[in-house]
Length: 333
Image (tube, rainbow, N blue to C red; front, top):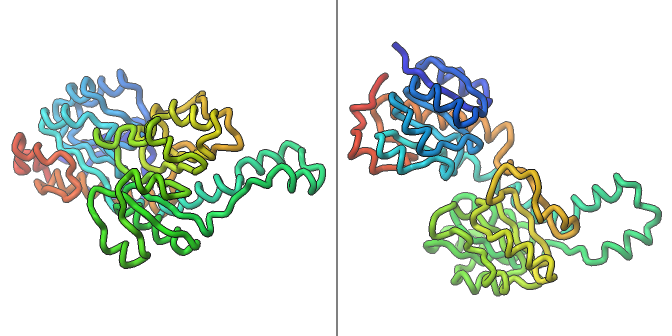
């Protein structure tokens, strides 16, 4: 009998074909918590997106579940403690989104400084009566060229951002948990303490994961170091104290904020919506591209199948689960 796997989002067809070679696959697209609790006990594996939160009380009903494969690099939408206690392996994807997210980060930065989203709304609303309006109203637009860009987080995504930003004629400063000599040699990036990066950069780009240590790493105190500067977030919403950002924009201290992520998602209303000139806001889709989604799908399938083969994938995020439930005990294929 094949393992039963539940997929909670619209997966690309080619990775799905690979999964169906080894597993019986059901779909339950973006279910509510109660709906998921009622069916989760029937499955041996799951593949989930960042829009499929798995809280502890849902995982407690997962009587047969052996593996949760995250179709994402982040895994903060899964209650790792609850999964580990039940002996459920949790995996993530790695590497496949770096180029897509880095490209998006650069796009957000350009859109923020050059006011592309604002001017799109401007021309669609019929306000372009003469060139005089443009030249007088948009004189504060700035170029990315010639700026100092500070990158917080120098993993694969941070490095891909640094390469692109260097090609645009910027200087690169960075802060990370450890020095990254490869990117220093490649683009001349300079490692500095966190506060120094904030103090000396014109643009700050956040490329950090969500951890207890990075929670509100940009807070009211550190925003004082960003006066007259720009902030871009393609990491996680919890990296930023959004109320402090709103206050900094209202007081004219932060020049602009572009983000693809929010503390609480999805967003229906937000105080940031009122700042049309100072913000660019997108709905957590920096990694979305046809190429990246297909690659990510294949890796998510590979991770799930590895666990069901009794193997330990490199992308296992709760390695302590091995002591609770050794790989040979989850082997089904």
